Image 1 (cartoon, rainbow, N blue to C red):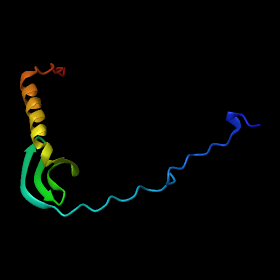
Image 2 (cartoon, rainbow, N blue to C red; image 1 turned 120 degrees about the horizontal axis):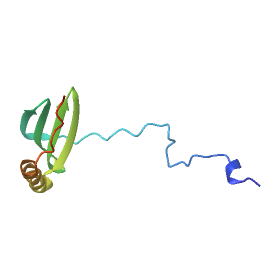
Image 3 (cartoon, rainbow, N blue to C red; image 1 turned 45 degrees about the vertical axis):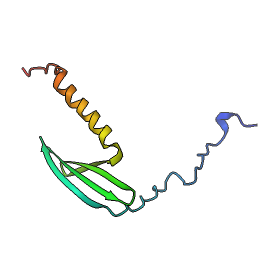
Image 4 (cartoon, helix red, strand yellow; image 1 turned 90 degrees about the vertical axis):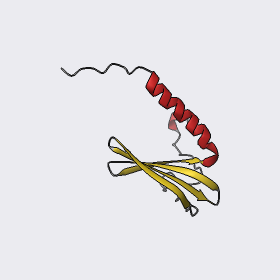
Length: 105
């Protein structure tokens, strides 16, 4: 009889062996651009695009810094809630005192 430390280890299989790459993303549905805007803040550039596809409208926010891009997508039904939270963050940034920065010496 084998004890637990004598049993050979078998990795469980969940459909794909762990060494296979993930399946590619399905192609995005075609999008119509309704409005675009760009803003530069310090060394970052933000691109905002209001788009529409067969599933509805969305806001695509892309950040570019150092040649790299990151994107978030907000479905249009959530834009009012997103704006509300953003307004709260802007107010907090104005009202909450900044922590003192150490002085280089």
